[in-house]
Length: 204
Ligand code: ZN
Image (cartoon, rainbow, N blue to C red; front, side):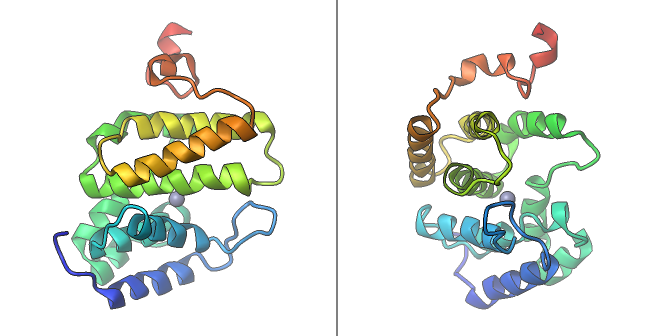
């Protein structure tokens, strides 16, 4: 831990993100408020990952604000500092790219993320895949849910060696998903046979 847990900053991040995500809901059956998602990511980092770094936890709470709200980089820098901003930027997709390119880029960039960004990314994939397994968007087919979890597994494969409790929790979701959604997670070696594989176009 490189700094003490600053509870007030964490709460500030929660208030800031709640305001920014106001009106947004998850696509699950009960349309949970969107803020539930980043809060669950931060909670997993603290509870499962056993990490009490204020920067990481704040960045986790803010991780979707640049991508999904009108929040500016300047606002985050002013209120939470450059260190938090840089983590959020690392886990923010380039929205000018199409969906599949963004999926591919996450796989390509994952190994080069900073340690702190890897933690946020890992917990984000854990929470998202767990949601897709247990509380999925109503209109998602079985195939789409399997694909999402396979893609999550491919991203996480490129982050392994970062935090073993979070990785074990993710593996637990994978094994449960394979049983409940009745499919087999394919090994990373075959990633280029999938549409989000870094070299998919070249071999197809
Ligand atoms: Zn997220």
